[in-house]
Amino acid sequence: MNLLVLSGFGCKISVQDLRRCSELVVTDGREDTKQSVTMRFKPRRFPYSSIAIDGHSGYISLRALHWLSSNKIPVFVTNFDGTLISSILPPMPVKADLRAAQFQAVNDQTTKFAIAHTLVKAKIMRSLEVLDWLAQRYDIERGVRVTKGEAVKLGNASTVSQLRTVEGRVALRYWEAIRKILPDWLDFQRTLSTTRANNASDPFNAALNYGYSILKAECRRSINAVGLEPSVGFLHDFANYQTKESLVYDLQEPFRWLIDVSVIQTFESKTLGPRDFYFTGDDYRYRFELDAKKRFIQVLREKFNIGVAYKGRKIKWGTVILEKTGELARYLSGRSSKLDFIEPVPILERFDSEELREQIKALTSEEAKKAGIDKSTLYTLRQHVRKEPPFKLYRKTLVKLQSARGSKGQTHQF
Image (cartoon, rainbow, N blue to C red; front, side, top):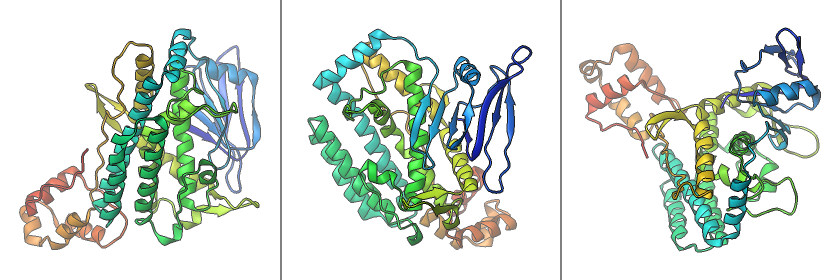
């Protein structure tokens, strides 16, 4: 994922010098002390995967829409909180047989349940892995145990409605556990109601909602590229209004952990703090400060672009979403008999567990010297463990610590 975000007043996208180079000219908006910035891109050399505009003043020319469509660049128009208002997508493949198979599958209760079960199982597994990852540092064992107790009930579900009930109860316990690790100033309350969740009354929810909107855009882009019908989902029902894209919501579920981990790490590391959010207007919803939004988008970009091993090659999580959408299409069309959203498995690493912190505190200068840890590194390590924010270690340093104390290491892999 490499998203170009435009915000502020006066965003513009146009095309200039048609005869000689046909450049796309993109002007970012102005906001407070931020000055507008203009960028120029030649055809087939656009370095971003998509464009998101959360400004409310500006324009896109018809020629620019033609340029973007020809270069297969989608444009997403969002509200200040990340709510997707509109999508301008490149032409999607015309695959009547695939869409017919999709409609047939959603009307077959056995197939519909199998796909929905696969999605829910993957989401629950990722949620439990996130909690196990957090439990290395925080005292949330009871929350983990209660959440796993709810997850076991997935085996008893026999209808899509029951799947949704289990998923909802697991999510409730999951967020209760996460709430315990967050600082009081966040005043975090997660609701399972989509409408109320979008009305973020605390900064953590505001960050989650914005992150989920980025994930939604990635899923929508993948569905368009494969040629599936976005309004026909298996876990989420049809809506009686046009704007609900049920399949997009379906595909988000196995990948929500990407946003959850990103938001947790962002607040843990103090990349975002109390001064990065504000209320405005009369709706009492939190907004990002502009610079904070840019920092958060960079965190999301890094998370989506982490490499993961899958089918003998290393790909990014943003690409995994596209791969899994293609696998769903092949399953629906009968070209594949298996559907799996469990693989690839993420590796969640925690270098600041309580066990490792105590290990560093107990490490003597003599032990450090024998393990090849110099005085400056030992001093830095001791400074890290005196502070609350998480820290990272170079792999070589971690190996030396393991050697010094005979530890088996603190890498948490699922």
